[in-house]
Every structure is written in C-alpha cells, then in structure tokens.
Image 1 (cartoon, helix red, strand yellow):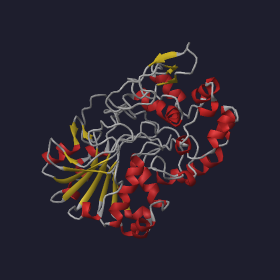
Image 2: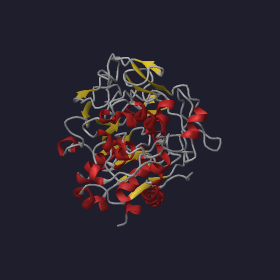
Image 3: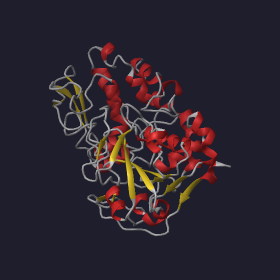
Image 4: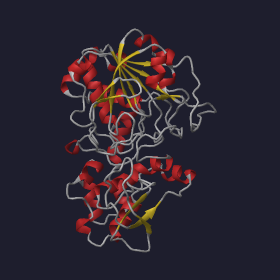
Length: 405
C-alpha cells in the first residue's frame, strides 16, 4: 500500500472561528485556523475512546487549552505526553522533565524529554487513539519534529491510530541553510533536512513516511499504519503567521521566532545567545568582545535557570528593535553575518566554538565551522549549500498540503 493512501489528510469542510490573544495574519483575507479548531474533522475518531495527547502550552483552541476543550466535549483524556520544556512550557532548554500529574485535571503526564523520548508499550496499552498537537517553528534544531518522529514510531510499532492536528509554520515561507549530514544526527537534528525546511508538522510527518525515514521497526509496519493529518484552514506557504502563544520560554515573541534560525548558532559558541535576558535569540555577546558594543548581563529567570555567562557583563549585538517588516525581508534566508562578525572580533578564535562540537550538531555537519575558521565569505558559504538544498526542495514539494510560496 502506498504512503499517500495510508496517511489520510482530513480536508476542512467546516471552519470553527477561534479568538486568539494575538491575531494571526490572514491568508487571502481570511483568518488562519489550526487543525485543532476543526473539531468536526476528528471528533468522531476520538469519541468513546481512551485518548492520549502529546501536547504543551501551545495546544489551544482559541483561548482554551485543547485538553480542557476536549474534556468539555466529553472526550476521555487518559494520558498526556509532554515534550521539551514540559507540558506548561516553562522548563529551560535541556532541562530534564519528570513524570507528574496535571494539577488542573489530575491526568497523568508522561515526559518524553529526559529519561525517554518515545512512549513505551506500557504507556500505550490502555490507549485507543493518539493525538499530536504542538506548535512548531519550522527550524531543524527545534526539537518538536524529533518528538513527532518518535511519537509516530511508537504509534506504528504499537498499532495505535494517530491523529496529527496541524498548525501553521511561522517560518514556513522559505527554505534555507545547510542540509544535515546523517553522520551528525542527534535529537536536535535527525533527518537530512536544511535548518529551515518550510513545512508544517503535518507535511513533515508525510515526508517521514513517504521517504521511509522512520526507524526500521516502524518502517516495517507503516504500510498498515493509521495516521491522519487534520489540516489548517486558509494557510499557505506565503503566509506570515503570528503565533498566539509563545512556543517555548526563550522564544517570547515573533522577533525571536524570525531570528532563531540564524542566531541559534551562537548556542554552539562561547557567546551568550541571550538566554537569561528578556530578549533571547535577539541579544548575543561575550565579555571579551569590544566594549563599544551593546551591554547586557544574563541572569537567572524562568526557562533559563543557568544561562551561559551567568551574571557576567557581555558586549555584543541587540537585534530586538528590528521592525517586523524588515525581519520578514531578511528572514527569507539564513543570516550568517552576525556569526561571522562575532568570530572576526573575538580575540581568541581557538576558543570561540564550544569544545563539545555542539556547533556541528546545530549545523548538521562539520563543514560550516571550518568555513568560518577559514574566513570564507558568506556568499561562498551559502553557495556550498545549494546543490543539497535543491535536492531537498524536490523531496519537499511531494508532501506539501498547502499552496507553496
């Protein structure tokens, strides 16, 4: 059975309005609506079932959390699975999350970031159907697509139906960056996709299946799998979607979301990437950079309890004042200029990159680090990506559910 048959896309016939704290920019004059709002497209599949949901604070229907919304509809939520940053989205990057219970509903929460990344057979033996509803930001090293892959594998291996409630990609209007070399696969990048891959969660799920990129046990059973995608309404890859809820503690606003594909590379260096400030991924710097640059000091705060260069006065750059219109223009591609300039100004270049080679996991290769060390200009570095980017774009277009840019 071919993949385009066994993964079923539930097209939207009835649209339910959603009231949001921040208005999503409409496509073609109409409000963009996530898959979770299309309740009539999946309610019949979860009624009278024991349901487990992979969710976090972004899993909303209007101003209401999806779990509360479904409970109000009489759906029996048996279990919650939580990703990096936890179910409420307050834990810092890399913080290990323990199993617990949701204080609001008493439902058991199983962490899939910490001791394990994939639901076990025991986790699923009392579950009839799985839901996945998490807002992604369309960047390879943002770990929710890795969580999606593991969740899909668990569904297939345990023969559980899975419904993916799709959400718009705020960085879905372009494709750029180095394509990952599988020798550098990790939880922050598992598949040969570029840093910005221009796909929604639902489209990415289709690609995982169609390219047979799941692990061998899941691939062996995927032809009989029941995996469905509930699509968004009024979304296209030309849309610039404004997130109604911050997707993680250190992406507090759309400026951070737009800059993240470019400034997250600083996580692999000794520079602060702005964690521990109110402008993460918009501020970056180091105590040894020139003192005529912007000053800031990382402090302990929710979502960044132990930020890099804690309590040290740093000198660097502040991009937080960049107008949204300008960000959208520059955000049609990865920006390397800040990284290259920081390296040029750093006094001890042998210590610029972290010794654990985390930068290579972010880049998805060991080439970019060497190109920076060799002083290659941005144009030459970008040119080195193009052949693999072209190949990826051919793969990508096979799995799109929405009109392309």
